[in-house]
Image (cartoon, rainbow, N blue to C red; front, side, top):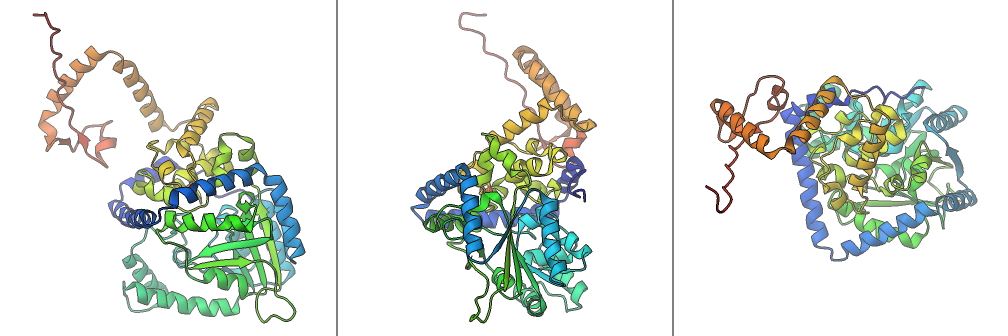
Length: 472
Ligand code: SF4
């Protein structure tokens, strides 16, 4: 099945999103809240930078020894009683999982949060095979009810307000409208409890897979990951090859920084360790555990000395919160499951040339690199990918080509300061009638594309150059 992620018009989607002032307000509130909380928690933790360095070192080691560690992980998992499947691509992963559902006659799946299953478009494949699929992370549950995709890798419903959720629940469940988060959460919890009790398949992602012990680590805040991985008789964990870490002792370094960077918590509420299926004398836990280890383009990233650093990513979401582009357009405008700065790197590598414009959706301000808990040099990779796309003669849409030609003309003009000064003076004089408080609020086409969504700072009349000393 062809991916539905491709053929997405990033330019049209981002233009629409920029014009949505309500969306921008919600994004600014939510991401601002996470950024403030994260800054506070980090300030209270003097070892934060030390732990960042340690985590980065471990990731570098793990990615450098990936073949060996994956083999060790597979052996340990199998010794522990789990079944392991290496999936070369999304189709192979989907087919394997659907095959398990068919073979075991499974009809109802509960899912913990997993960006990797978004990547492989698992839900529609299971539904086509007659399996009901329920997202159980609250944000994922909400976006599933709205037939949407998550708009943030950590907080899937970041584009919605509590009023939006109140309206959704009122329409879907017939309950009296409320915007009180406690009541809305209670309703979702009641609905999900009965679904958990009747599910026969659990599916989650994996945050870390420990090669030394064959342990899968799942961090979360709601307990739904624990329910999804323990209540149903069949449990499937889906992970990218980059999730492996060498030793159990390494884990603490990641747990110290992951939640601090993403949500500003000291640690997530639940840290689940999954090692083996239910033993004969045990009362709970899955009877069958499958671990799907996905490549889907990651090996090619590994082979590129610049791109391989993207495999360090912990999916903490901090770079999205810090990104001035993400904060204005939100996640849906990116068109792929991974959004924001890291999404602009992952999507073209995992989904192909349809996502080739995304590395250009950045101001290269460096906020993502600053905030990343494992110090991934995202701007460097974005520049690397831009150069590659340009070499491949990326075909720009008409409007974008015009903008690029205009920038090229400006670059030529900027080399002639005397002409620039004269033109600036003329522009300042011509534009004077439409300047209000130092800003131009309206300009005629083609400049109206700018003033439709933001004000333009009025050009200052360029100062006349002082005559050189001794001049007249
Ligand atoms: S790139 Fe860094 S900041 Fe962004 S999601 Fe990954 S780990 Fe977090």
